Amino acid sequence: MSHTTPRTTVDRPSAARGLLLPHMLITKADGEQEPFDPAKLEHSLAQSGASSTMRARVLSHVMHQLKPGMMTEEIYRYAFDILRREEAVPVAARYSIKRAVFALGPSGFPFEQFLAEVFRAHGWKAQTGVALNGRCAPHEVDVFAEKNGKRIGIEAKFHNDAAGKTDIKDALYVYARYEDLRSAPEASSRVDEGILITNTRFTRNAIRYAQCSGLSLIGWDYPRTRNLLTLIEEARVHPLTCLTTLSDSEKRRLLDQRVVLCKHVGAPHLLKDFGIKPDRIPHVMEEAKQLCGI
Image (cartoon, rainbow, N blue to C red; front, side):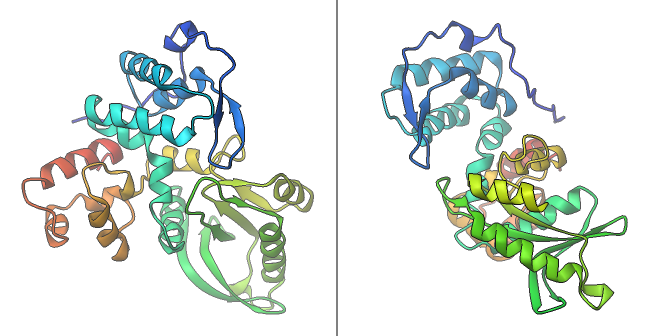
């Protein structure tokens, strides 16, 4: 089955246009409140590839369930459940990608492996857990990547829930580490740039410090372009935790064996070796094929 790239824009003559709401505040994962914006929900549905009919259906359902202070996680769950039941196979998986990255936890190690895969998909040679010697101290770099003579070190800051933010102390630490490696006596240990990457967001102070010092930051939706979500989508490098046809325990067994991408589950013998029942294997492979283009 051929893969069709989902639309990433939302037409204004859409379901969201006709929804007139009172000033309804909803609660984000970090506890902050913001007005519910149906156009924002529709945009995320469109990015996942949901049809206009399905977007209208999801919006209508959410509108009927909406109440003051509702958590964004509840809204996500309503939308995801409908997509999983009624939309084409890969749509729910795409819509759940942010939660799928959280599901790489609880430790940060699979996240480091996943970031290495993302950078490889963008043409970098990448390794995890690389020991380098700086001018003043030794360092273990989460992800070390090289491309066209440029060498970068990546510090991966993984959070298990959406409320977690990466703050200024992490930015200070990473900046100091890569300044030390930038001036390493041995060329093999030198880096041209250090990047702090998180699966959530940065505090304002962390961003302010990074902009002043020249430290590169990549968060889930920061900066506006070339953020973690766009890097994942452009390379179509989806974590296996996106797959709705695998159970949580099956995903964990695969992660424990360093299988972190959905495209890596494309071999029937691999799925069978990890205890997936033969009658379910074609469904898993079909979802992986449509989502990841394997």
